[in-house]
Image (cartoon, rainbow, N blue to C red; front, side, top):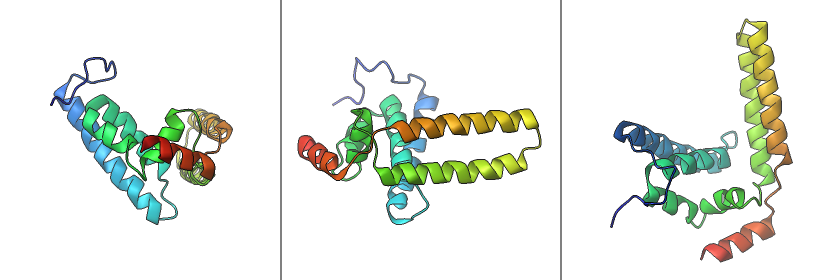
Length: 146
């Protein structure tokens, strides 16, 4: 049983980079699972980061994550264009603007502050415009993955 798919154009060939992506993916899954229990830690963002790392480093872990009965629902909703849960949007936007506010306060250069603020606005618009993954979609996604 091989771990690589021949038709995966995203697969990284460098062993060092694959290892780094693997480690970042594992840490992202851990943070995502912690986010389920800790109210200020976003779950979906970390799981999407883990999926992005695994699709480039480990087909086995990517398939495990997207087919996971609990964690895979959010990732599958995003990948299928159905959206992310509204709660995840709120957490993401809150964390984005909390960290951005601190960063804007610390950074002394006005052009960098403006650039960071514009990036934050762009990311916020992108996240806000994503569809809400409501309970019925989560249920139907779960039924499809079984």
